[in-house]
Length: 226
Image (tube, rainbow, N blue to C red; front, side, top):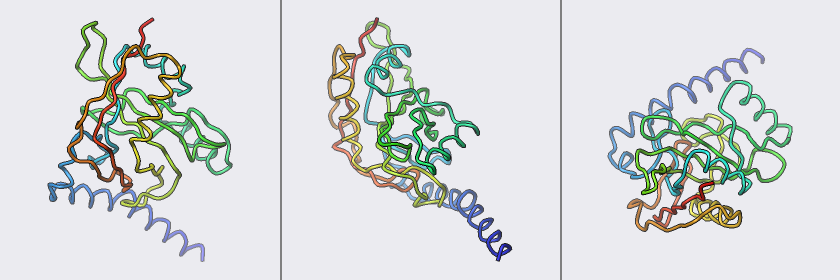
């Protein structure tokens, strides 16, 4: 019995972490529709990730202070120790309000900053947002950041690869709105506006196979500079 279990475990690991990611990478390159999702991040294997739906203008310190004031904490970097801690917190239902987020990619690099706001007593459910610094600056010389906000509704197996992952709620607009409500309530924005029709494709799937949908608008906030 133990031998069969070991064989099944090794088979699942090989399928989930080696074969299926390669299959999806090849499938995307052969199907232009999968590669024609504008304004989305990328997973490590270059399949589409979560959509971009927020932008903030300010220095890195402005972002960190502003999000902290809104009760969004900076996520810890991915490492073996933080991975083990989030696994333990998830299984034992313990809080970990700075648990790492998986890496997504934009401009050829993973996110520069990530923040989260835990829901409940463990990291299964949480609000989270990733930000990348762009090469654009505002008239005051402050950098423009673009980000992807989504709500983790639970932990499970990837619909595409079978790997263990968080699953996001498909209503990414609601998470975008939640972030801006929190920023406004914290009083850290000096201005905000909406870029309409930022997305031409209003639905898709992320690297974990989760469906998402959007009204296509990008919310932009200007952080108060201290």
